[in-house]
Image (tube, rainbow, N blue to C red; front, side, top):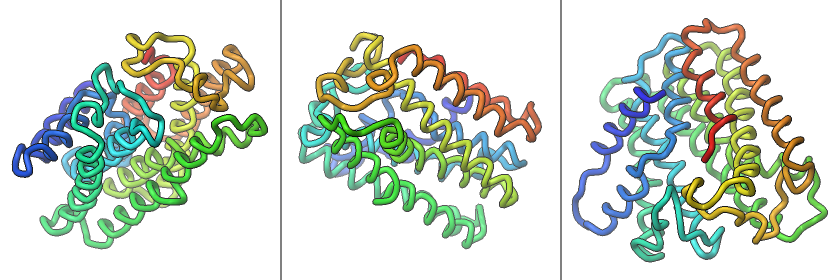
Length: 290
């Protein structure tokens, strides 16, 4: 995982050089190159390798999915959304650059992500139709039936006690699942995986997305702001529905363990050596402390 993250960081650094307009590119690099866990890129690379592909083939999409993930974080932190001043232990993008620059940087990252995917065909890395399918998968994952839906449902849940477990699962799956699904599916697509393999990895991505959000819910009320690198307890302040709020901490941890087991089971038919980085990532997502 660490080696893959290192490769991703190098590729992202190259993808956005400092150029005019300088302030926009500084804002883009500020959020994109601040470390992060690189979960989406690792899933994409690992899924590609799992079915016999190479890291280099997946790298353009890898950069794109991380750009889109960072876009979602930059938007989340805006005052009109979750209104958070801290992200990954430092001031949120809008606190460092101002809201207008952040919004423009979000637009620029969004456009650059799809430009990165489109270059796969123009430089002859993958067949054009594979690139088209990758673009379609990514667009769907962040649109009104994916990440946007999850964010809207999350905002709408504030102060809504009638939302139960089924509604909360829908929020979490839509908020984190679609882009992780796309990362896994496109990785397998680029690696030459079969439709059956891609479907397994789609379910795997959805499961890990839900797992990640459940653990986020737990950490939000069990860790400090310093430990998390973002504002702790903000879900409670916003009166959002979370797993600990509905079923308690212990039941939430049990559910996370179940999702961990489900994710491992989904990969049981693959070569376990090739699946090692995905399995390590699942454990990391389950037992992380921030």
